[in-house]
Image (tube, rainbow, N blue to C red; front, side, top):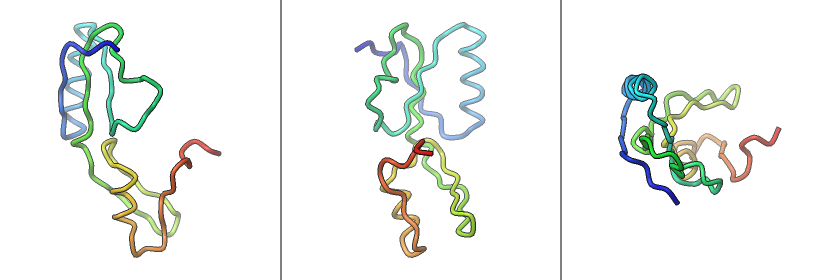
Length: 100
């Protein structure tokens, strides 16, 4: 496990854009972190860099019951989403992302 050199906690898309532009200009690796549910080791900062902890970006920004779609920020957990969907007849089960 390799820790990052620094961690930032942006709370808006504009902040992510500014930080990413700075990292790009300085040629510093960026390591995204959402809710910590991934098991792939994607948060491992093998070349150092800045970890973008996106867990504070947890807004559910759009819900369309008609076409079964929802727009969320990267820090939204499945549990929080299902709490938001409660009473609509919809739910987001485990294991549905990327399955066709």
